Structure formats: C-alpha cells, structure tokens
Length: 635
Ligand code: MIG
Image 1 (cartoon, helix red, strand yellow):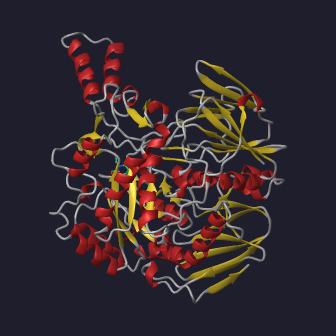
Image 2 (cartoon, helix red, strand yellow):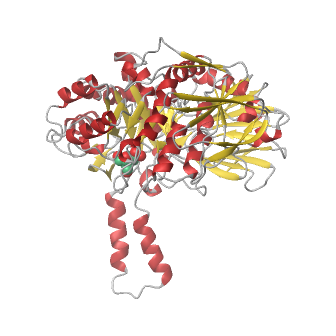
Image 3 (spheres, helix red, strand yellow):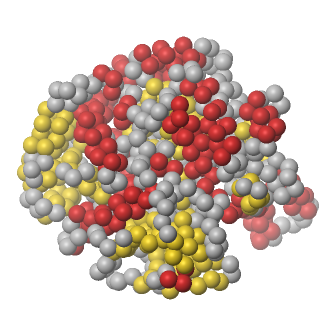
C-alpha cells in the first residue's frame, strides 16, 4: 500500500505518474519536525535490518553506516568517502522485521544519515519544507519496489541493438579514427554494435553541429557505418556555446529560453565550448525546442545519443574567476602564511561547480523565478526528458538509444543512465555491481558503467574482468578518458580472449532482452540483491558481490587482480556455467560456499534448479544474430 504525504506546496517534479490523494504531514508516521526551514524525519533501525536504495550512489548495496546526499554532482572520483554521484534517486527500502519503502519527491538537496550519526537511527533532512513523501508498506522488498515502480511509470525501452557491445573513447575525433576502431574489431572478429562520438566530433563543442573537416560527409558516413552494422552515438552537452551566428544560441536568446540571473540577464558559465548559456529545461517550451534540435542529427541517420554535463557541470563563471584573481592580487608581494596559501589554493580549486554560481541561476516556472538550488536535481532529468519526449513523438518509443549522466526519478521513463566517470580500479567493478539493483529500484533498467574504467590506465586483466560483468549489464560500453591507455578490446595481446567474453554477450542477447522487457512490463528489477530472494539466509543477506539476474540466474564476477577465480556463495543448489565464446562448461554445485576457478576468457553464470537458458550463435553485430535458432541449456 502506498500513501502520499504532502508538506507545503511542492514543486512538480514529474516523478510520479499516478494521481494519489495526499495526506497532511501530521499524519506521517515517523517522527518529524521543521528546523531552519528544513523538513526532517527519522526512523529507528533494528540491528540486523538492511537499508537498500539511493540508486546511483557510492558504497554498498546496504547503505547503512554512512551519510549520503542527493545532489547531482560532476565528481570524477568515486571514492567511498563521497556522498553523491551524478544522480538524485531518493528512494530507500527498509528491510527489517517489517519492510517499507520511502520516496522523497523533492528536487533540491536531501541528506540521508543512515546510521552515521547514530547507528540505530536513520535521519533524513530535506533542504526545504515543500515536499511529497511516499511511504510504501506491506509485502516483501521486491513487492515494495514493484509498488513504487507502478506509480512512477514504465521504464525506458531501448532498441534491441543497444544490447550489443559498444566502444567509446574520449575521443575518436574524426572519420578515420572511427573507421580504425571498427576495422580493429572486425579484424579481430570481436562483435561490435556502436561506436561513440565524444565532444570532438562537434564544431568547437557546439551542440547539434558536426566538424566538417573531421567528418566531410557526415550523413554518408553514418549510413556507411550502419551498413557495416555499427551505430554512431554522439554526445550532447547541456551548455550551449555563446556565439553570435550560432542558431541554437541565438534562438535561445531571442525566445528567453536560457536560465537567467536575478537581474534577468542570461546566466553564463564556462564549459567545453567556452562561455555557455544553459537552456532552462524547467520550461515545457524549452524542452520542446531543445528536443527538436536533435532532429538535425536524426536527419543524418543518427539513432542514439548520450547526454552529458547536465548536473549541470560548470567549470567556472567570469565572476568566480574575477573574484579569485582579486584575492590573488591582494596577496601579491605578501609573505604567505600557511592558512592564506591554502585558502588561495582552495579559491582556485573551488571555481568548478561552485555553490556560489549555482545560487545565481534562476529558472522560470510558470510566472515565477525560482532559484536553481531549489530544483537543482531536475536539470539533467529535464534535459533528457526534452530529448526523450521528442523521440517518443517522432521516432516512436523503442527506436532511439538515449541515456544521461545526471538523472532524477521520472527520467527513467525516457532514458537510461550510465554511472559516469569511474576509474580503472578493481574496486569499481563491485561499485558498478552494487549500483545495479539500486538503480533498478528507481526504474533505471538500462544502465551500466564505463567498462574497463574511465579514468586512469587500465590493464588487460581488469578490462576482461570488467567486461565479464558488463556481459550482463543492459548498457555494455567500454569507455575511457583522454590521455589514458587505449582500452579497445583488440588493442591487447590475445584479443581472442576478449572475443570469447564479448561473444558470450551476443549469445545471451535473446535471454537478456527478454528478461529486460519482462522486468519493464512487470515494474520489476532486472538485478536483485540475494537477500531479496533468500531473506532467511544470513550469508545471502550480507552478500555484496553477487546478484540475482531475472528469475533463473545469479551472477558473481571476479573482481580482484591476479585471482584465478573467486569464492561464491550458493544460497541453494545451482548449476555453474562457464561460458567462453561458443563453449559451455556445466557443473552442478551444492548450496554453500565454493571456490570456483574462472579463466580470464570465461564468464561465470549460475542457474537455479529447473532453469533453462537460451543461447543463440554469436554474430559480428546484433543485426546478424539469428534469434530463431537457440541452444537451450538446462540446469
Ligand atoms: O569533463 O566529454 O562523463 O564520459 O568522455 C568531462 C568528455 C566531460 C564527462 C563524461 C565522459 C566524457 C567526457 N565528459
């Protein structure tokens, strides 16, 4: 049963699609009060209770013992000391003697102290007093998630080819670079469905333009690649370059479509293109306008996009830089003491994504000017909604690939997400695994991490192990940052090992796609913590390195370097499959702990009793998959 409690006059976020009659906040069953214009509430936590949720966020499947913040942040260091990543997914699920779900529909900052200050208390601080809180009571964790999902609407459905293997890099700057990646894959006989175009494909980072020197006849190029079975996926950034004669900028200025400052002038900040204006995605007219801009690329045969920098990320503002320079000038000729030295250093380091800058942005909502800080967490979600709703109206749903970096619940209806700038660190294999069920709880089914890791140099074994988890994530994309070691599968010695792993993905596509569609149709999770399925099993309850996938499978990736395998916990008798290329090795294992050996070219998968797993033949791309002829593996 779901109950809605309303405090004050909340700003509409679009997260919830079902109309519910709201109860006043006095009837909210948890202790709550308002202090310093902040709504706070708390609930006790039993010693063994698990708290799931918060979608894309640092740390574990069980969120206990840390303090998190919902505040979409462009932070490329996903260490366990962080409190936020790019998304605001305000859903918690308490699983103790009783279970309940909690969704705080509020577009500004929320602080979630889940046993950080006091081990046995969860305290939530909403940075405002206008919020809708939804409480879901009764049933199992899985039933509670489904109840929540049923009020936020069906998840985004990508095209089937978006389940193929995808290669990205910052950047493949021209046609020749793209060709050589495709050539590298085809020559090594490793399947590939997409190649990404990062910011350098544009004409000086201007959205919806293409650098014509780098891509002389872009439309013909896109067509030719598609004939080879490869989709090109360009990036779109939130900031619009301030440049006279650039139509997107000029139209935005003429129509008042950009975010403003308090005095009504246009808010500007520096991002990749230099000084930018930021579309005010809170306005429906702006969403329609910006969404329709994607048509320029659709017209050239493009059928997939990734929306970036939409927290929004701000490198600097002119005011911020001026202020920092003045501070520096004041100190000229002075003998700096330590505190002034560090203050100066922090002044420059703090120029990016500065709270002072966000606080100067205003949105138009109806006839009101609303400060950005009140709606910060909706910016990326509404950018993505702009594109998603346009595609829905024109291309029809299910035909365009779209995913975003920043997100809020509601965006799950029109797009997927990726988990942003992770590192080529072993710990980030598990971080990805842990976020999958949490993202699913909020409706984000099409998601994945940068496989192989974005920042820093990857090693061959890391990429292979990362890919072996990526075989199961709906978005299976290898991506890496400028200046890091090349990380395409064919670049490493013995590329046939990579072929073995990636072919497994293609063999599983009929099963994965079908399982995805089922999860979507039933408002269900694709990935579940083991504790959802085995609540009475103490080892399963604490497991943070394995997941249930669909109703038949369990996954347990290898996540440590120099390991020839790993210890896996089987909550019941299962069949272990080691999949590698077209090879399938099958072994029955009893309930309990097992050390299993997994070679670098193998993907382990566990089947429950009675399960049947369909596998198709691998192919160079999804277009060439024969999904009629299936080999069925019986457990
Ligand atoms: O400031 O477009 O998360 O995937 O490669 C970095 C360049 C901007 C951040 C994205 C990343 C992308 C990169 N972008």
